[in-house]
Image (tube, rainbow, N blue to C red; front, top):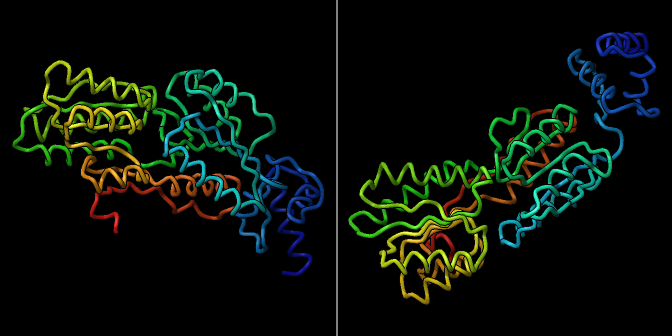
Length: 339
């Protein structure tokens, strides 16, 4: 392409983007400051017109991405945090990942972090409860052009956001199918312990589990979900209360965490139900090998972190095609652990 053709191409881009020729020149040649909105218009027009040249990023300088994590001490969130740290190191030449922690008992902190960023952000990755206020705040971010990626909760009816986690309804259904197969021909009841039903992820896991159990093993009673908020003592109390009523604990599904509390109660009472839980941790590996825990469903925190960061990069024009990375639902039993 000669100089005349290049100038004509830039003129066409300027007309399509609705900006001046000098703005196109500054964007394509990285000369001077141009707002992110205008940069995206210019680059979108250049791609549509098939401008034959290497295009710069849609955002000048480093991308600033806020990661909003709940203050959970569980192994899953520890693993998820470590996975994001690895992604931040890997992409440090392109983005700055700023981690913020909000207290689960104070959702107003999450609301403030969403609505009042310390610096202008080009991406928001968030663990969020499913409430109308949170959905409205995230919808406002999306409307303002901020790419929003959700972790562990798909937040129903939130158009424009991207979900990077596993299919939690499928995870619950898998737990239900495996539980019903293990309990076929046995008597007793199933105790269902969850974190908090304010999280859409746990709503989906519980719903999927109950649906399949009702279809596959209709004679087996399943308790209403007991919300223990991943708290070890609360999990112990839930099992104690169940057994204190003289009920037979045939199956136990814990859709969240709090394994110490579950283990403590089962050992003290000397019972070994079919126990299905979540996350492939070292603690769970030991319990699987011992046989106290039957199987776990892992939600691939490394895959979630990688998918989330790639989605932010794609939304900001740093990737030409949508990311192909996706978190994988994995079922782990003692036989898959190796020696």
